[in-house]
Each structure stands twice: as C-alpha cells, then as structure tokens.
Length: 305
Image 1 (tube, helix red, strand yellow):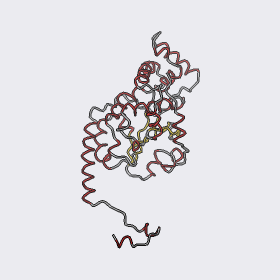
Image 2 (cartoon, helix red, strand yellow):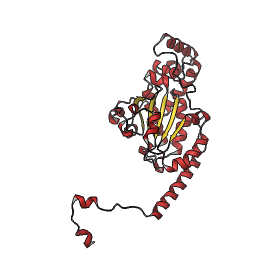
Image 3 (cartoon, one colour):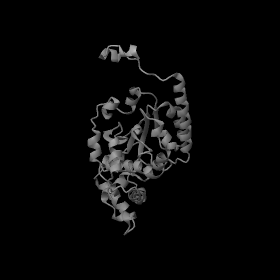
Image 4 (cartoon, one colour):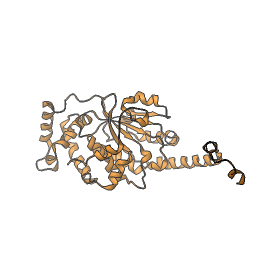
C-alpha cells in the first residue's frame, strides 16, 4: 500500500492502472448461473401461445387507399355488422378505421376485432395516464420512432435491457405497449401497412426477461390490437438467448411467426443494415434517423375510445 500511494497522481498514471478482471473461476460460475437461470426461464415459457398474433401473409399493403370512396364503402359494410346499441356501434370512427385498416379491409374480421379491442382498452385502463405509464414510455424499452422499413412498415424498436420486471408488472408493460401501438395506429399508413419489429438485445440480462409478460403480450394483447406483424428481427442476442432461450422459444412460436423471424447474432451492423436501411435507424444503431426519446414519450397520447 505504501508503494502504491507513492506513485505520482497524474492522468497518465490513472490511465495505466490495471483493469480489474474477474478470475476465470468466477466467470465460469457466472456462466453456469446464467445457464441455469436461462433454462428455468425457458421452462416458464411453456404455454406461450402466439397462434392468434396476426401475421402479414402476403407482405403487401392493402390496395384500398386511406380516405378513398372504397374505404368508406368498407367502413359502411363493417358498420352493418355491428349490433345496434352495442359499445362497438358507439365506438369512434377512428377506432373502427384502425380495425378495418389493420385487417386489410375485411369488414367481418374488423367487426369481430372491435369489441376485443374495446375490452382490451377497458381492461388495461388505457384512457387514464399514470406515473408508471409515463416512466415506462420514457424508459425507451418499447418505441415507435416514426421510421419505416423498405416495405413501408413502421419500425417498432424494442430494448428490453431497460425493462425491470420488479418495477413494471406484466400489466404495466402491456399498458405501455398497447398505448404506444394505438398512438402509432392513428396514422393511416401505419394501420394499413403493419409493423416491423426490431428487437435490439444489446446489453440484455436475464433479470430483464419476464415470461409472464411475454405470455400476456402474445396471448392477450397483440391479438386484440389492430396491427399486423410483417417482420420480427432479433439483433445481437446475448449467448444465453442465442444458445438456450431462443432454440426453445422458437419451437413455441406459430409457423407463421417463425417464418417472419430473423436472428442476427453479434453486434456487426452490416447484417442489420440489410434488414433496415441506416436512414431508418437511430444514431445509437449507426443510422441517421433523428429521434428524441423525451419528446416522443411526451407526445404519446392515451388510447381513443
């Protein structure tokens, strides 16, 4: 200690200080612990149901244009299928159009979706902002930047390293996710063209993963939102996801969802740029799309009714 204290206290000396590294035994122990936790988490994913998540089959936007006479005719056909005096009949035209556009102008499917959407809005109390909701939006874990992919689909950017299941319950997460989606779906083209999900797993830890949240989102939330999934891109998954969790979870996904899944191992951005052009990615991912998280979070409005 005396010898160490005699060293000159200069910036150069600070830079030369040896970095502390964990002994190999400690690293092995950590890896074993993470492996065990990952296997337990994968086991807790049993029962995950993705069969009702709506996948964009033909990957093409609807032929009907927003605001056109054809759209109004489809809306009238949908209205005819709604029971008089029902909450669905009394719902706003904006919500009805979201359902219609999200189901590619299939009036019967849109009419069936609307009461499910209204029930979701009520169950999650989406019309009432809360401090927890504001914090979840500001965290950046579930974001629509406004950018689109090459097919014109809005990009949903997920960064679950910012999710703490001990602070945000599955219902809290679902409330934030549904609020973000319904805010984005007010844009006609977003509702018409669907979304492309970029699941950025950089920095993800086992403590960020919540099987009950995944089950709630895939089983109860996404199927009742007027949105179609065009692509699910998993970028830079940590080893315990790539080697343990993902192979098991992949078997639980529907065939349609598996067909839309793209896994990009490692932090190399060139494969990412083949999926999403740099102009559609934020600076954090080496892109040039301008995005201010605080401004975006403040702009997200409660759900329509």
